[in-house]
Image (cartoon, rainbow, N blue to C red; front, side, top):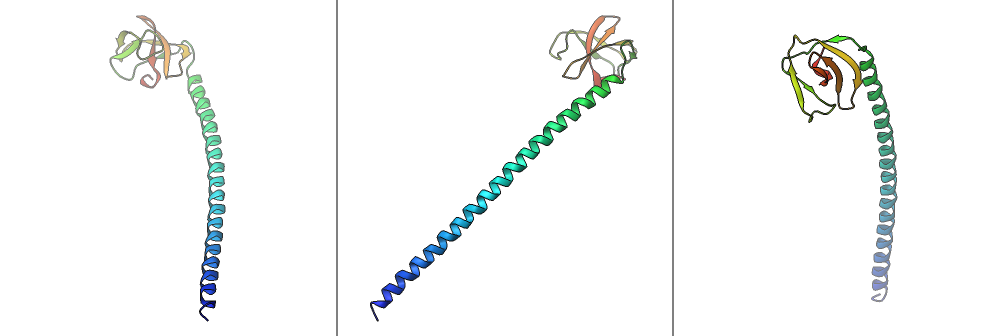
Length: 131
């Protein structure tokens, strides 16, 4: 009976290790499935982001078409900077008051500045700060 006992013990250890390997294999399959789902979700999110960028671009175009070249616009606040170029870090020509007459020149930069004509010459102002 003593010789059978070690055999039973070895068989039990072998059987339990096989079941743990099977559990490990199941875990790996589950992990692969999860990673595949994450990959698909990432692709969907990237596609949605591209679509949103297109909508955002269309929205900017539609807001730009609300203004017509030669249209009179006014600043929403005093001391609105009139930039020399379409860059906020460029030199400020002057600061415009709420009473300043501004004429929309039609050019729009990608950073939200629009080209205008004033009594001080042509320049660029932030589009969200004008009526």
